[in-house]
Length: 268
Length: 268
Image (tube, rainbow over all chains, first blue to last red; front, side, top):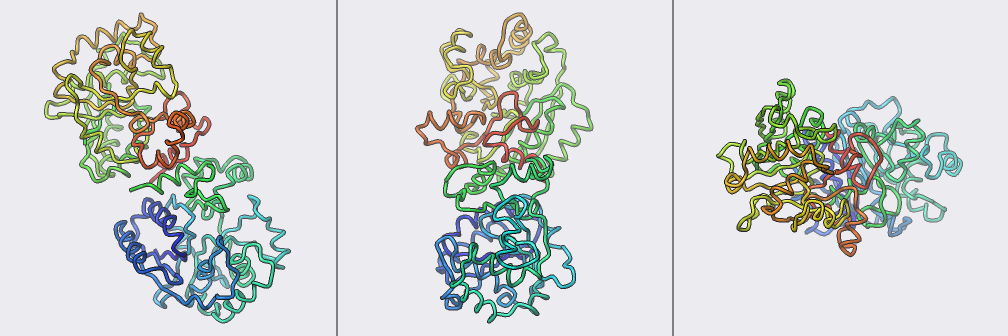
């Protein structure tokens, strides 16, 4: 498998937690972690390389110029690096046919091979989940806000058909859209851009399996008629996504999944 | 390491969960799981052997006659097999110098080598933790009840110095004490017997590290002056013990550690 991550130095610790959980469930695959970054210090890159190696994975990194997005909307919570995933089809080597982008604020708790091997329908280049049902900003509001008729996709997990995407994704268009967005009121900057530009090219995958919002256990349970309880999740869910401001590595309160997160966080 | 377990067929699934968690943290050691049982079906034993092997551990089993304890106090929650640990120094082969008994209703979340290699002080043959502080039946009540002046030990985790124990532990004495106990009001049958017979030979080890009662997070936190929070536990605690009636594999309510338990329960 080829996994894409894009982060700055602040997200190295949660990435390591994600990787440890990934390898605990997916150790049977030959996996390369690809990092697209805006100039992370070489010492950190060497450490990341050693870390991946020690868990039996490969590590490759691609530094891209920060100048591309110098006018983009950036905050502490939404660093520039979050835009890099948009460029993946252009920046990653031609030899890669597909890649799975995963946010570093996640845990991988089951095998990802079914997602990795999924077929894309005609006209679709990305696969992503929507968090509409469990009630972030509701699907309808986002559709209205962005004037789209497809689901509002969460960009925390995106399987990319790079072969097809290379024919559609245009670098200049992305950079232009990102840089112009600072003048518009974006609630979730990178996600809004992804949905506006590529929502129509994206096939929906179930969030309860591939992008489970760890804040909303009661909502998932209720919406599934009590089917998606903790037993179901641990048997079926592949990716737990610790969305929102209260990150488990920052010790701000607990939810049902915090002990599992911290287990991997401190696992030697 | 040599790990001792004693259970009947009902406890095979939680044992497997425990073993999976054990191997996730202690895969670097050459480990044998020893099962003392009262006649588990051969198909189950073969399955257990294959299971241990698939995780890189060895499995050895010793069947002992159920007749030994035929008059002992037995309930659904306290099956006869719980007494078998008392016989370990006599039943296990002379070639073993020490063994670590672990209840199957536990998760192993950190390396056990420090416990495994601990030195026993003069006159002590066992090492176990007390749950006095976090407030089950309090230490004082149990001391009074059993008329002892040492801590009241929880028998869920016992490191045994078999070499020394063989000189002290007497089979006839154990069987007599167990069988007579049905006439006395025992609150925790095997534990009361262990404490009465061997409490004075037992050195205390910290429960927050080696026998953490998963029901009492708030009490541990309070008693440690907020030191033993979830971060501390995941860095330091080796054995989480799911004490009490509400077992996590029976889906009766959740505590802070249920998601971690169920992760290992369903881990493939």
